Image (cartoon, rainbow, N blue to C red; front, side, top):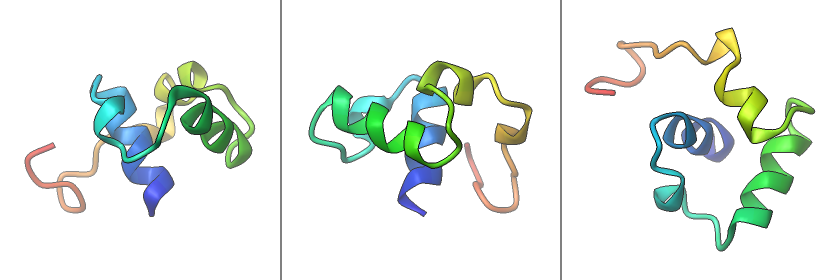
Length: 57
């Protein structure tokens, strides 16, 4: 859940609000789940915003 929230904040340009201590921690954790860099994850088609799950996103 934290990963999903962080990736959506990253895609919206609000990575600093994701709760990670620093950029390297965010990068390491994002890369550990899907195996992509944060830049690649943000461009991924599966990141489409679901209005039911994320109202107001």
